Length: 85
Image (cartoon, rainbow, N blue to C red):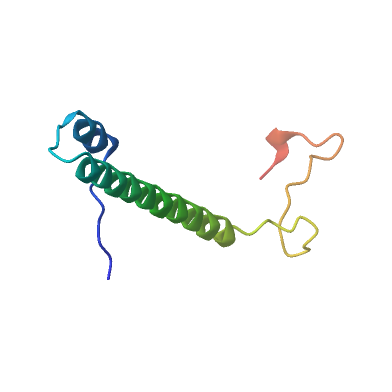
């Protein structure tokens, strides 16, 4: 089951400006937000790496020595482009 994480650095900075009656509660809340942001960053990094792997796995290099691949040939000496039919 996939869940979105909506915590941002802005949330963390706003929370730092809030005042709590208990410093321990404030520290705990800041740790929770920082942990959520870290998890979100790890998920995004993993997703980026996964997409990059899939994209490079789909691209196959061309085999230039393959006899089945048609290669353009340079015109022969004395061959004029106007004489082509």
